[in-house]
Amino acid sequence: SLIVVTGLPRSGTSLLMQLLAAGGMGVLTDELRPADEDNQRGYLEFEPVKNLLKDSKWLFGARGRVVKIVAPLLAALPPGLACRVILCERDLDEVLESQERMLLRRTQMPASTPERRRMLQDEYLRTLSRVKAMLARRLATQLLIVEYGTAISDSLATAWRVNNFLGGKLDVAKMAAAVEPTLHRSRAGIAS
Image 1 (cartoon, rainbow, N blue to C red):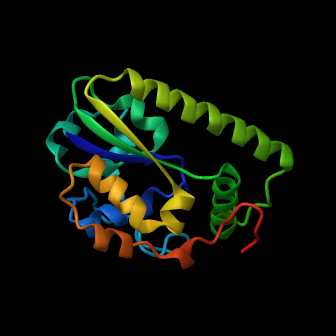
Image 2 (image 1 turned 30 degrees about the vertical axis):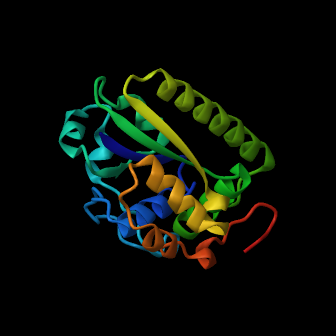
């Protein structure tokens, strides 16, 4: 099956990709998006994912490997492709804070208003609900939800859960060691 890491933007998907790579999974990445201040260990993205709505057939050739696909693009997964999906969930205030910090650094835009943040939070909740419902209906698809805060605070337990979900052949110690808690800078209710 294809292994998919997914979530909202800035929800911890790069952390999960790093964890899987450290554990021995083949990670589908082209390294076109380099590491930066917002993601110091890199994004582990694959450019063709951006065009999934137009072309998703190549995913059949990626079976046995892991690819990161942002949650709204999961609807483009081809029917009949067996998938194991790891959904990273993160406190939405942290997601929005992390997104805002990244946008401020890149575009120097002013901070969003409380109304805009509420609107985005509501849209993200709807997106996650739609994604979970769609994945539940997909044949030959298994879903594991990983909470970002738990992945940071208890990386060993998270590594064991992910390893068990993927068949038990990964290096759990290396997976847990790949988690760097000091990189968790945007926390709900805490300015960093």
